Length: 201
Ligand code: C5P
Image 1 (spheres, rainbow, N blue to C red):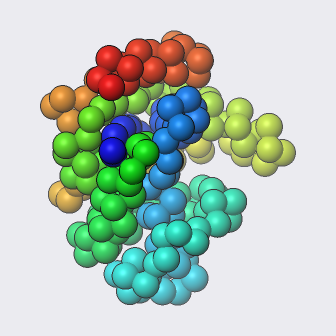
Image 2: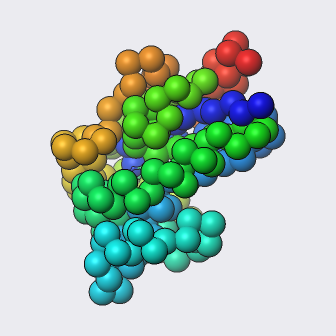
């Protein structure tokens, strides 16, 4: 039996942390769909054509570590506006979602486009300032020297591009449950999500 949890929301809202914790709690597989767009962005930085890179991508062979830079995130949000790039990534995501044993997918368009029939849809958000603070703390903890104002600018630019593109814009599905993590801990967000999922199982 498949059971799909779709989690969408803007950059650094806590989706990834929540999705991973939920998948561990319920024993479901987890797919960070942002990595697919990041891989295409990295391919374009390396000189490739976005659509050709997307069509040739092997989504089961992505190196998350090298794809987590700000430059790759920026490139990802640029290629993500291209309809043929998005189209090339749909089949893999849908088959992942339908696997036996349950799946959690996080991204921007999972509840709206990839899995409109998901069993549970969550829209995870937080203020841009809090999201920039969290990203700053994360990078600082990793020893990366960065600037909070620059991160806030980058978060806002990415939100703007993700929300205003014509194809699969970032928007909460009408039937999604909103989780605003602005003044929540990760544990509080997880507890809320577990309650929502449990009610639907
Ligand atoms: O989630 P993450 O920050 O890794 O995503 C990088 C970029 O990929 C996003 O800013 C967005 O433009 C794009 N993306 C998307 N649809 C998804 C996941 C990510 O357009 N389902």
